[in-house]
Length: 588
Ligand SMILES: Nc1ncnc2c1ncn2[C@@H]1O[C@H](COP(=O)(O)OP(=O)(O)OP(=O)(O)O)[C@@H](O)[C@H]1O
Image (cartoon, rainbow, N blue to C red; front, side, top):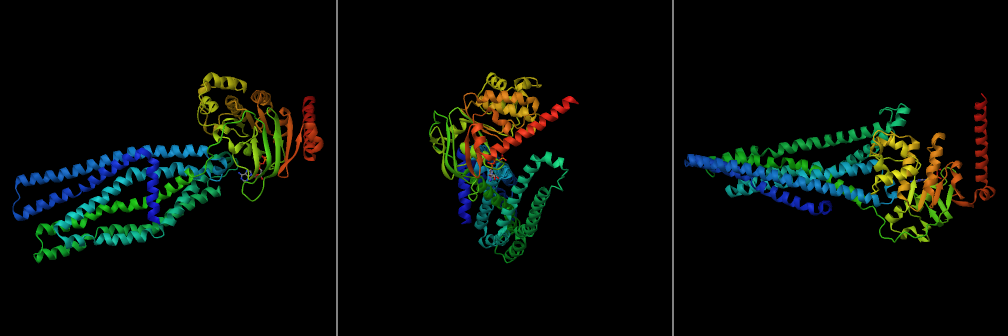
């Protein structure tokens, strides 16, 4: 079973490598011949010793043998070096391919499936796990072949010289196999725990770095950030446990593999003294017979790497096997949106939405209002098919979103999120987001988003690099960059997830103007976490009690829905207080 898994993982790895696998095959062939060359120096030494003991050693003979020995060593290392070059070339290209495959696949995977995995887990796959594949392809494959073939060829050569002593030279290998079996018994579960602890540490590290502001604000050092120190400790403990468990086996392996001399010197000596072998045969076994197995020492390290590589292949495969939305037709001409008797649950247990109906007309601006946690963001996640409904349908232009090609669907929906994420790239690239838009087009969008003047005032204008996590820009500036992105995308359906939340009184006017430009001629859904965002909408839908309870104009819904009426009464009272305060301040 384990063997089957091993071979299928390696097959999969070669399949991922595509035509780069031919580099690997070349590396294996070169390594194979390098392994064969291992016996050339031994042959040279033996023939020299025979000549010395038989009295046939001449200057020419010594020169010829020295040439054979030196040639064997040089050819061996040249072949091994060439094998390393080929394997590295293949490995790096294969690595690039696998990384691109994983990233491309992740772009097509529904958000829901990715959300179930932590950022750290995905980072571990993209970084450490795929890196382990490089270790295997570039180093382990050629070494494995060379270190296996070398001792096998030497053993065959020893068999041609003396069968009993050649067989005795294998005793350390038999003992080493027992040691290795002991070493790997139960090691796979420990290796699994070790890998898990690395993934966990990565997750916590990503969280720690992303939450740095909060950690500083509450003066939490790495020690008081319990989760972080616990993950570091867990990782440290497991590797300590691993070295405690593996250490004695590793040491025994080294001792056992080098103990050939203990058998071959007395046994060979006995054979020599009773005349059954010549002095040169005795010396050949005393030296070569007891040493040739030391060549396989690195195999032990390779086999422990192997367990990690298999795990890395499995984890990479898990990501590549995440189902993606395939097929589907064109985006419809009409852009009205409908939720028809929708039921949805994130965890399959608690329904966030049930019997939920909503119709948004083509070109209409609909606000979703409701208490925190009511399900407003969930509604937009279903429209943009980040998740699939469990019952009912989500329709755009009368077509079920499941029947629309996923990429086309995403191309035709623009979303401005509450939090704007800026990549570590130029402002220009942050607005055009991988499209082929020219600087003129990007600037035109930025002008409509009321951010062009600000960008032009930056030292490098549109080439200004965004600092890590977009830290150089204020919330309002980031939001207007996000609006410029959406204007440039020019999708017929627009979703604003509280896009005005970062606005302060100074840039509120600019953001309002930017949003007004963005919404022109689009079907718009606004997730209104604050009632102030409603002023731009034609109709309002109330999300409460796991469904949409009321839809209509502001006045209709205010009459019809107690929650909405109360929310407005509270809002107006609060605004009154604000005005009074402002009035008081004026008078002061
Ligand atoms: N990825 C998720 N996995 C599990 N539950 C989730 C997930 N996202 C949201 N929920 C839960 O679904 C419910 C609805 O959440 P949703 O974000 O849609 O509410 P909301 O009305 O947009 O809230 P808010 O106004 O506070 O943003 C909440 O109970 C929330 O805890």
